[in-house]
Image (spheres, rainbow, N blue to C red):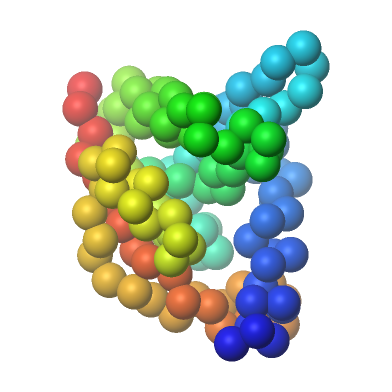
Length: 136
């Protein structure tokens, strides 16, 4: 529904500041302008739970003017390589419905659609839980 999207969009499109300094966070820039950004963490989003073998995609996005130029693919491949080099064997993500084909092209399989609660107001939002194997 439109009211859920209106409440959820600012929550899923605004980076969490603490992730920006995380070692798994990367940017692609051109002449100082950020064109794509995203990262991974060992922490399951919203839980503070850590696993030794599975990491999680966090806030992957491209500037609208850079969309469709392969930057998202390049960024996610770099994230997967980095996580694998640190010993992780799987990468999970909670995808928006429209980003599922993007992640599938990069080796992610759909596990299930989950209702997640976003932000302090616990806005209910359907996300697609996906997983990809990582190659060492």
